[in-house]
Length: 209
DNA sequence: TATTAGATAAAA
DNA sequence: TTTATCTAATAT
Image (cartoon, rainbow, N blue to C red; front, side, top):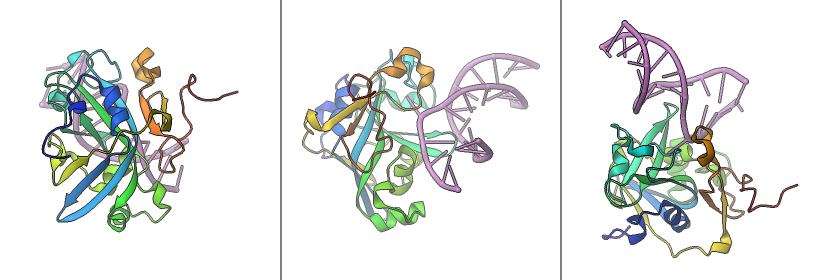
């Protein structure tokens, strides 16, 4: 991400941001070593009315406090006690929202990514999950609250991907959110080989029998 | 299908 | 403060 924060990260619209981030590059540079991947799957969370959001109802705890930062900051939290999950904070300060990055297509530093994950399978599976992509890029809770405009962790936005290349579906693992669990807030590049959940499209957007 | 340990909320 | 419960997942 260049010196200025892109405007789409500051609007109260995590859905638009989640779509807009598809195709962008997520980059880390740790100990002078660069790794990066193209964002191919995202989920939108927030603002306060979203029951699937950690900060629903403006719930503010030591963990969720990060979501109240202005857009363009990193929100990294631990899931199931062992997976670091990487999000980009969205919206103005004190309006909690974020986009979860769920899958990357590896671009730079693939050997280092493999070494970090101790993974020797197909490169399309190297960062195809929210927990595996942080492991591959070396992202941990130490990166929580960083602004994403410089090393060690930043974003290079791409041109917007055309709507015809984007598929939509419900978010993963949010059954506790009641009716909000079905909201079409997960976005991915159609037919991309690095997806985490390639086949779970929304009922009203896919072809089913 | 077993697993993993931080974050949280409730209890004391 | 201690304890009990839950968890935006992964690997087998």
